[in-house]
Image 1 (cartoon, rainbow, N blue to C red):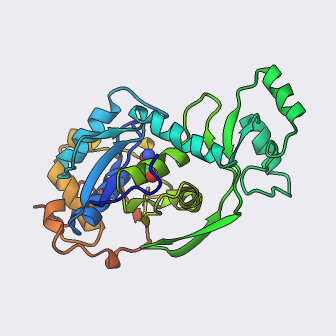
Image 2: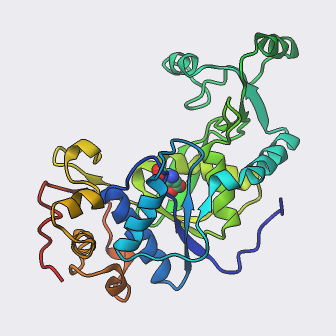
Image 3: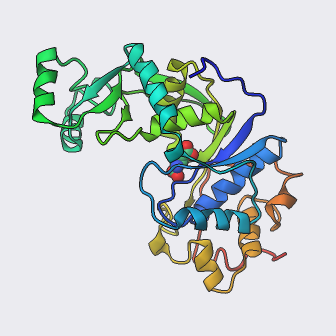
Length: 310
Ligand code: GLU
């Protein structure tokens, strides 16, 4: 891997996981990511985070829905499953720098240990960090599949976010490669964003707590740390994260009720405090300074009746 990739043409991105249909909150985040990039003349790329939870047909429907509400993107869609050697190269480099170790803990063991009052390393209590050679060899003969973890030398890392300002969060010994050999999201996202020239990551604010460890990982790999904008989620009437059971939450559900993609896009614009117009019509007036950290509460009719329809 090159030491520091030269970013000639910076980009924003949207990176859905193809685990199902995008819901209104995902579409709203995608619109914002598109607006942040396009309103500043940067490229906008789509990446499919398909190392985990893939549902057949979901990617195609996600792309179709994004296009239907008026978003476009540059170049081919990138899939993480096509980029495994890049993640391995990053892991090899961290390993060569003495920054990885094998971990034999099960999820259950980690949960039990994490509830102990003295977890020294944030979420992961460090059980396998300093095993002796004999202990490691015993695990190997047990045949227990090993995950690979980062040997972090920081407890916390600070990032700056467009909406949240300075944000400090824990850095722990994150998993870099799972026991089944698949690279972990926290590693893949760092490698991809850097190699795709992503200079600003716009995504849902549920991912804000993971960001310090991702930024820290970038510094260990000598990769540039992107700027961040963690945007508010869409919540249901009970104030909980939107889910399938909340009713007509996908574009497909809305179309089945007689809504149109243009009207859904217009309702998303309204929810951001703009007139009910298409993403393209928002470009000129888009100003991130007016975004709030407040979530959008979607009531049952919120999308069927945007303030004024185009
Ligand atoms: N694929 C992740 C998700 O859909 C988002 C990753 C990211 O934006 O960094 O939750």
